[in-house]
Image 1 (spheres, chains in turn yellow, green):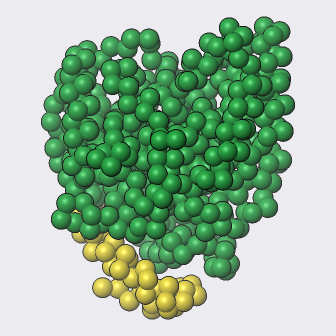
Image 2 (cartoon, one colour):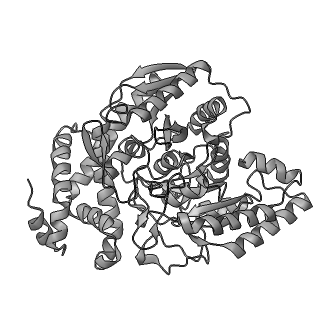
Image 3 (cartoon, one colour):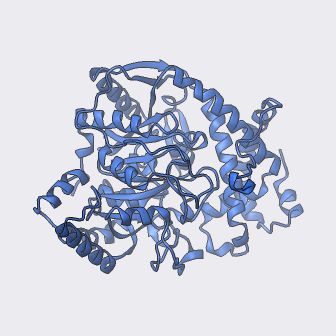
Length: 59
Length: 461
């Protein structure tokens, strides 16, 4: 499992230890669920949100 | 009475908008101390709008079915000159200088705005137990939550304070209160209703839609607020449909899917039985109901959780040095989002694309899906877990489990009342349709409503 406290410190997030302890189970559960899903995405799939130049930019 | 019935009465001069508005104000006076459904009541503004609506009708100027009808909007829709808090201590004194697009459109349709409804803090939760403005309470049992985040809108409509109230839905926040309060709730397709002038929770999951007493009332509201808006980058140019169902809508031959995986698992048996009864009612009306297998909705929900956590935290990042201004549940979610790496966010959006392709294949088999809206009826205020079969689930995750994925897909979804559980609490049926087929889900909903009348059940006095 990830060390969320070190991640918070490295990102200078100033999240109190008690608050980190409270969210650790949710983050661990999400990590365990999401990691295999992320690994299963076919290489060619692009994100649902992509940058699009609006038509008026060419006018 | 529904909006349609009242609209007829208004035009027959059996009642005036001023009288309807006065009755609504009196109802709010009596019930709001108990339900806390409104954060702000715009009494003077409403009386002026009602007077103008009556004068316009007398002159022969008719703005349509919402003309003169008392409505409300969730306190995250900007209202010019009227405090808009988003249920947050950060915005206690925020007074916008312009109306949200939806508020503009409701005004243009002649609706009378009674005020701003209570909500979960920042629309980020499903209880509407707000640490800054107090808990909104469910009219069916004031010890229970109305759902959220549009809890005040659900409570106000269910209690009969207003005919329709606008909500927003990022992970079920229109459909959950509709289910828990026994009202109709419509989350339109992504891009169908402008988000301009709303206080966002999220960039890619927010949807705006109505809570109402009947399917046709929700359809009337959608007809008033739908359409392209160049001020919203996600707004669709897809033509607006004919949303209000006919007097006797036919669903003969329509293909309705009942998912035999995921949606009927880990639910209260009463919720499952209520959905099956609605499927039987649809069959009696000539629809073809079949079992279908849906893609991995748990994966879809997980992608949705990552997207919401990160986008909401990105939006609120500049306020995170004021930790004391957030309630503990919202702060916990915002902290989680700040700890997720950017790669997870991008991959969640890629997973969304994969799931969208897989889910779209369903539409070759069926025209719409039936699911429970929520796995259970409204929990008690302060309850953090709920028992569903052998499993003990977190209340937030349980309440959003059957609705969150539909936001990720951006599809239209309607929740309609489908009866009461063994304790006498409302349950909801969710009807999910193809992108931009609001007319289809509304037609199915109206046909079932005509056949069953669950929407006429009202909370005990």
